[in-house]
Amino acid sequence: MKNKRTAWLLALFLGTFGAHWFYLGKPLRGLLYLIFSWTILATIFALYDFIVLFTMDAHHFDRKYNKY
Image 1 (cartoon, rainbow, N blue to C red):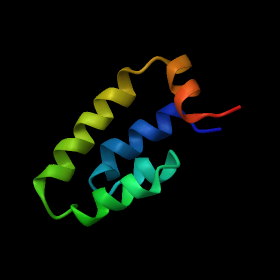
Image 2: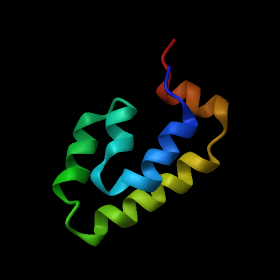
Image 3: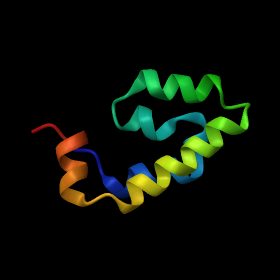
Image 4: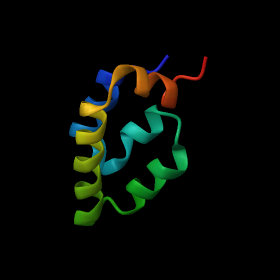
């Protein structure tokens, strides 16, 4: 089971490197963030991902990332 709090913390602190996407089971997206981590775009997208994950409803997060 993926934890919502862990996901948004990873997005906040290591989001530029795509750590939150590797955690959420999206390795291709995480690899793209890692490749572009030297640009400001990865940081901007990581900040956006943090806001989305932080404000996402727990039930929506579970439906999207925790497959039962």
